[in-house]
Every structure is written in structure tokens, then in C-alpha cells.
Length: 584
Image (cartoon, rainbow, N blue to C red; front, side, top):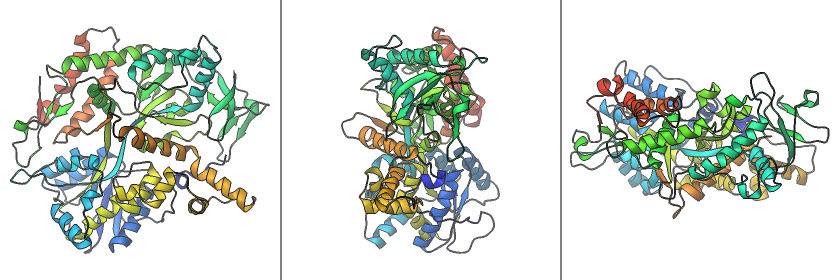
């Protein structure tokens, strides 16, 4: 199948092109400077969207990328405390906003919300999904204790499990045919839903990998060959060495290895050392810690009444994971996953010399990965080992927790056109423009009007011929060599069945049919934001990495020391000593 250009392949809509001017200096009345935390392809997406927002609001919107969440907070705080050249509107996490509020640099949105509703005869808050609004009301309050609104939701995602669909299809084939010591009862074609199932199925997946990977760095592993159906499911398997003489290049110049009978190399373990492979790995080690301690019945951070007495409210927070009621649960969680690590089932990116798992997944070093729904496009470059999506594993039916994450948009005090800035924030977070952003990035819509936008609905559900053709035209899918009917079917295939489109749709369905479905017992949670909470998040990244240097049989004191190194760090005890309390 033809692969589309990376940026075009993510879009169902035409995107306006053109670079925008950067920040600095004075701005004319009506000009809006917008700083975002995105880099790479998302920057060009936002530049096109900024043009559309400007046209809708009737002003110029200058988008400036700051490449990462950490960098934008650093850059904004530097400007707030120094030159004062910060933007009119800015994306960031709630814990970033807590620090901006602490420096009196953000403006409450309540007045502009009321004016917008009055002018437009609407109830704007009713459009936003309630799950994404709580955090924006949990940053400060007025003198009577009424929460104030300090942000609107923009890009939202959550953790889910992506996996190598071809490997799972092969594991199912082994079970169904009672090969390699497996039986149908092992049911490896059904991916584990709970961590208890991972205890049982994980070693069996590991056993398959051990027979495919190279035993050491000097040897070569095997290749799984097979055929694929229209949706990418694999069948007719054969395992043997890679034959470089049968290499071909696809349309993008990537090597593909075929057997003479037409079977293609689905998963290549040629350069995978057993010692450098794991069955499953988690991208974000801070999200891993925050999510798993909650699944194990522990608590991460908290805001208690006595910590809310500072003005404005919600400035201070407690570290809870070493408290008397939580410490043992946290240690039990660390030990559980360290045991899975001992068996070479569970891993983390640095073990593959990587920051994230995407490269390791591409190289065949990891078969399952726990990642953000907002980063699915990074894992779909290889059509052969089809990337599929499932919900995050959970501990049990009473502990189905998954973290909700992503940035909001805030209004700073550096403006002489607050109303126009608020209108731009609304345009970015609702309706067709928000839908366009989600379609091109895989983020979840934050508003009902975005979910119900025709383009988004046609993405979720395969549309009629007219919409298919319009979408195909938007991403420049053209097949003049075919008849009109054949070209339409080809367009339908490329619009709806490319790896990225399938991953986005499956990720959206996980959110709609699992995490947000009434009665599913899933809890999408957001931990409280306060001054210093982003520092705690940075520090807990090291917890599981350090735990994996131990063994599952290590004494509790070894795991407790890892936790104490976090809470006793200078960043906690000194820098934020007036804002963070360690409950122990």
C-alpha cells in the first residue's frame, strides 16, 4: 500500500501553509502572540490553524513553538521574572499555571466568559467536556472561596497500550496450532487486560521472543514472514533467517524483505539481542509511577484543607506516597514490577538507549508499549508490523485508573486586547478548528462541538462516497491510472486504512468505549496542580528506573530508600520547602 506523506497522512482536512512571525518587541493592538509547547510536525499544523483562528477572530495570531512542556515553562518563567516578554496566550500544564498565578501573570477568564456568553447567546461551559474542566477551576479562588477559571482545555490524551499486531497474530497462530509448547488455552491472541494476566501471559510471550531474538550481540535473530489481510492482520507464517538478496524498497525508500512465494518480513529480530529486548515497556516513567501507585491503592499527592489557607487558594500540596497509610502499598507496587523486570518482561526506554519506546518498537526490541494517545503517529511508520491499540492494563476491577494529561490555554496579563485573546482561545478549543487539530495529531477533542464536527464524525465512522472523496482530495490522494470507481475505493483505503489512521481511530475508540463509557468503572484522573508539583513529577521519573537496578526479592528498605531519595532531595526540601509538605 502506498504510504502518504507524513504530515498529509495525518490530516483529513486541507491545512493552510505559511510561517508566522516570532515573538519579541511591541505588538500592535489586536495582534495576539500565542506560545505553544509543541515541536516537529505539530508546529506546522498549529501555524496553519493559527491563520484560521486569526481569520475567525479578525486579527493576527502569531504562533511560536517552544518545543516541549518543560522548555515552555522555563521560558515563560524567565520572561515573567525578567524582561517581561511573555505571550498573550500560552499552552501548558495546570502545574505550570499554578506558578504563573503565583507570579501574578495570569488573568481569570470568568469576566470574559460571561461577556462571551452574553454576546453570543450561548453557554460556553456546557460545550466543554466536564472531565477536562475540573483542573482549570482548581488553581485559585476569589475572596469568598469561589473557584476562578484560569484555563480552557486544548490538547488532551491519556495512556493506552500499543502493540505489535503481527507478533500477537503469530502468538495466536502458535497457540491455535499447539506449537512451541503452547495450546489454545494459552490464548495469547487476546492481549492481557490486567497485570494479573500479564503475570501469566508475559512469560509465554517472553518464551516466544527468546526463540526469535539473537542469543547475544554477535549472533543474528530470526524473521517472522507472512501475509496480511486488508486491515493488516497477519497469517500464513514462516520463521527463518533474513535473505538480503530479496530486499526491495518501498515508495519511501524503506527496505522490505520478501520471500520468493510473496510472504513479506513482518517482524525482523535480526539485530535484536535477547538481553536488549523486553515484552512490554512504558514510555513516560513519571506517568508510570503516578498511575501505578494509584492502581495499587496508594496516593501520589494531595491538597488538604490546611494547605489551602494561603491566598490565592491551592498554592500548596502534600507528597503522600511515603505516608504511613501509603508507603507499604507504594513499595509493593515497586516490587511487583521489579519482579516482572527480573523476568525480562517489563522494561523502560533507557534500557534500549532511548528516551521513548518508539525507536525500540520499530527495531523489534519491544512488542508492547504503554504510551500516550497523543503520540500514536510516532509508532506507525512501519506498515508491516501493524501497530494496534488497547486500553492500559489495570490491577483489578476496583482499580481501573488511567491518567488524563495534556495542555490547557491560559490568558496572561500582558495584553491590551483581552476580549480578542479570549475569542482566539475559544476558537482553538471548540468546533471545526479544534476538530482539525485533533484529526491531525490524534489528541482527543475537548468540546462537544469538536466531537460533533462533520469532519471528526466522518473520521470515526467511514463516510459515504462524497465525504471520502472530499477527504481524499484534501490529502491529495490521486490515482489517474484507475477508473473513477477504482480510484474512489483506493482513496477510501488510503483515507481510512493507513497505519496512522487506524491507530488514531483505535485510540479514539479506546477513549470513547472504555475510559469514558458509563459503567466501565474506568477512572480518568488528574492529580492536583500547585507550585512545585511539576518538580515532584520530574523527580519520580527516576523511581522505577532505580527500582529496576534491584531485584524483586530485595528487602523493603531498598525500595523505601529510593522513595526517600525523592522526598529528601534539595528540590523538595529547600527550593519548594514553603510549598510542598512531605506526609510521613
